[in-house]
Length: 142
Image (tube, rainbow, N blue to C red; front, side):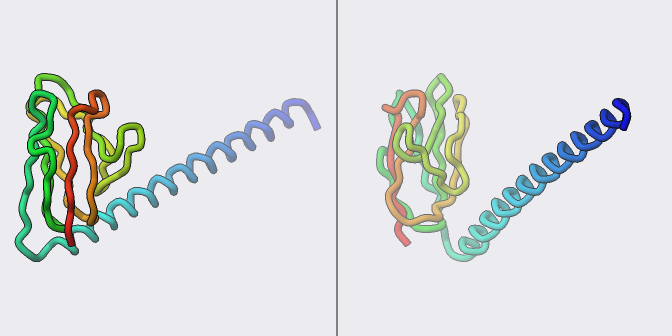
């Protein structure tokens, strides 16, 4: 076998391997996005009926107002940043974030809001990952 033929076989093998990796990444991404869509449509079906409230928390002067919020499953919680700098709002304890309603953290400039549907019962913490003095909690009852 000539050197040139070996090079052609090696190049073809690398191209096939790279194609398989790309196809695998596309498949995994597609599965992940489909699960996210299925979870969201499940929440929409679960929360479609009934009279649900929108609960509002404002981040002002480095504090969450109110600090503790109580709602029912399927209510919506909106957190709005009114301070004059970006807040990186996250759920869970500082440095131990969790995902709530598909959101783990979101940057909020002045006037921006983050809204989640209260889909899981229990008590949860949210905080500014940059300045965790700006924090609060919400309790969701079934």
